[in-house]
Length: 202
Image (cartoon, rainbow, N blue to C red):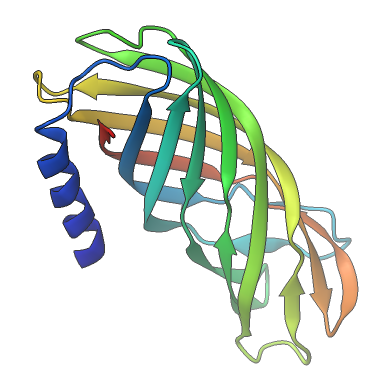
């Protein structure tokens, strides 16, 4: 949380010197707190896998190709505990899910609210999986591509160039679950990413 507070303070200082409008060629930087909430369903016969949610800091950059069309890339990493229904916690795993979305901005120069929608692609790296000792062998999770949908809005704060941001993404993602190197099946994680933060124009 100390890192997030420092980033937010830096955002506010830089934004004091930046104008408010978003036009072709502009780059926006946002710092968000993001809740990652897996919406787990499974394709493993007889095994129901689950994962908890988490709240993490996230940084993203947005480039405006035109006044209305932009591209956003997010960077964040999050840790989740994993469990099997009826057995309990089986371990944990870290996720690094860079996501690139193409956005349509409805009112990029508005002084009140600038809503946008987006769609794109995600690639999630699963790393540093740890076991609880409940199962007899190591549990691992495969990296994979997924699709993403997005909706959000930037809300200018006065004329300083600083703006608030709220953003919701749905990522359609599955991972191969292996026990001792043997594939058990694919589990759908399909997480919701709900973010709130601050931004400014570089």
